Image (cartoon, rainbow, N blue to C red; front, top):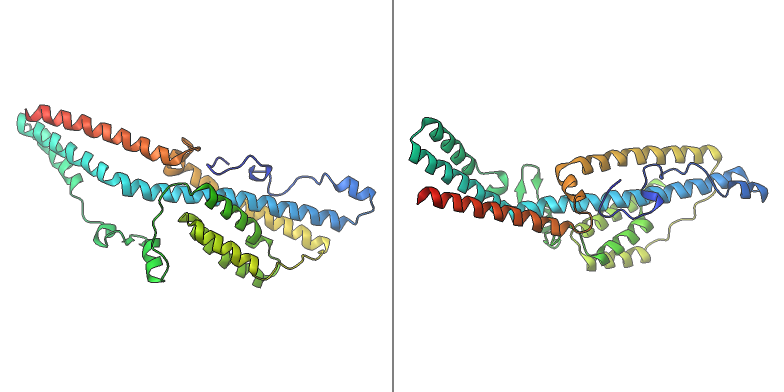
Length: 289
């Protein structure tokens, strides 16, 4: 998949979640290894490949979400200014020509400037049509209220996030209780990473290191190992659908245009919009002269 966070590893290729062959298999057979041992190695390799793939998808999802929110916060007023200028230009043209068609266009342009207040506006940025924003939820639960500062979190935050995800990923669990513990922990890790909170990520790293050590994974029977491989394959297919949806979305498509510096992309969009504002202002000035 193509994501800003994708690392040039085999794990992030679509066919990498379940290895197609075991290079050590032949050598293992020569050493007298049991088939279950070779199959177990294949399962472990598939688990690690899936984890790397999920890390790439999740980091890209964070960038898509942050870009969307920052785009709205930073550029919303510019879009509003463009709409207002378009309405004033249309009204100036209608006043000059007196043409009913120009008057109709002016009314339509003005209507776009005065929409019904959105839920977001009514609740001053704490709630939209989908419910509470994360900052509002954080405030209600006693957590720190911090909107994202950048589209892409810092290098240190990304390093800490990858390290934690590789250590505590739920797919490494063999027991349901352990999987639940990891699910809850990774949810907290994802939230900290989305905010780019390096301090909290370090605290979570220390917390995981101090927690119960993962149980040694015993050698399973071949049927259980095959079932595990099949589950990993199905899991990878589901994540691939999520990745496809992210990449084909409007924001994902924009981010793919600037994989190395998505924050610069916001600045470029802002520059283009401000240039349009300047053009509209000049056009309006000519009409009113």
